[in-house]
Length: 289
Image (cartoon, rainbow, N blue to C red; front, side, top):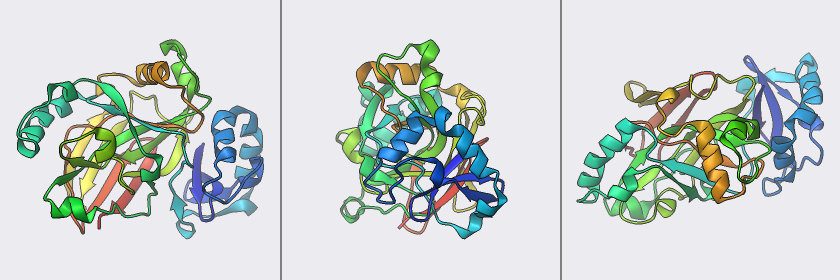
């Protein structure tokens, strides 16, 4: 199933080129985006809600053309956005050159896999522009794109064994981890408003390809392919990411985990468009201003 949020934070099931309004299947729905309890209830209890969701999604009377709605970020107020650093070998290699150019030195500790946090307020949707902060642009810092597979936590948990990790996952979506290349903590440099575009929907784990059988691509301005990678090349695989993160912090339903930047990161500028695709999930194109 492909689950989307659209218009006034309605819940939709995407079926081909149509979207079915399945909001009535979820108890306690509230259009206020600051009230995310119903969304977390869905993320953690999809199995219980699935029969009614499937019933509503199959009703032709509930369907509209997908192009007629405004898709929003397919997550509401996650308790946290976890992000992985240094999780593709070729990206680690290219970062030696990026850091030498932008920082004047290579920070070895940043070349090792780990997780950090991004502000949930940095989320934006598949129809929203990335907004470059004036003061950062004015100081001449590069701002880069990173197109990533994003895990959407389902039931979550604490100290999740690797062998059980996928059972804690709701599904996957596409994320852009926008990053200021400057000195300072990752969480600050990646947490500006609009620095976590997400979309276009969540593909639940039963419908998505296996985590290691997806292909990620990012194209800038319609012609320049900057990133192209297979998820089988992740240094730390998805089950281990989930397990590792859960040993540090309890993963709550609806939390997001960015799995790490593929090689090919590069600067973005006002007027750019970034089109990113992950096989078996979908595509989204966002502008930069």
